[in-house]
Image (cartoon, rainbow, N blue to C red):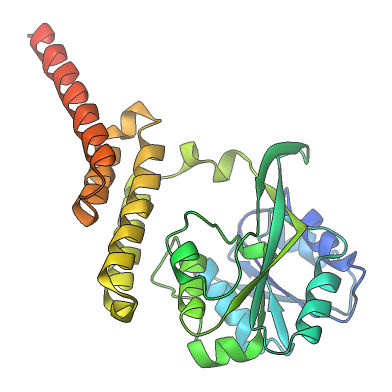
Length: 300
């Protein structure tokens, strides 16, 4: 059980407690304080549990923190929790029982509910809907999003495939599920096992749009380099959906629309055969360009 943490003094205590309160108690919890400068480390040290191991390091990013924990983890099964999310009490029990009963299952994920920064339930949810050889469903984030806290993986998988890609500051978890899905069948459990927290720091409006765009391009380059065996049509349609999803999200913020259009045009570039998408994006850009042109002329 691995939790990376960076400046999460408001939430880390509840995250750790949700693990310690599991109905299944045969686990180790490795928390990596990734260079926090607030009270995160002090809060972690207040927990008196033989199951909890704290690693403190300079800030190297969440992938490095997870990889550091993987190096010392001793369990047969590996699960993860982000420092602002929560496990529901039966999370580990459900997944361990399933993995024990299905020795041919190498990775499982579950559904999850969403809460706000104060723990109140939101209307959103993530649904675990597909099982089997599901590369095309999960490698491009849509239509199915596998959220990291819901996952449990056999340790042998990481021994074979390696660790999280530390060059990715986003999509590193999706990248790992993509790599796993090429070699192993993945199973879904419909049960909701986690509470995923939405708060000011992780909302889209708080992110750097340029960083998101760069991370998308890097992830796409990895797909193009690593997954030629998948087939051009599957890859290009999936990449188009990925660019389209984030392009549409960027368009919701007027100051990000230039980046949004870049992503939407990448959607068309990778899959120009969806005429509805091509027409919609072209009209959007034409309207936007004319408005900017009229605005600049009015200023003159």
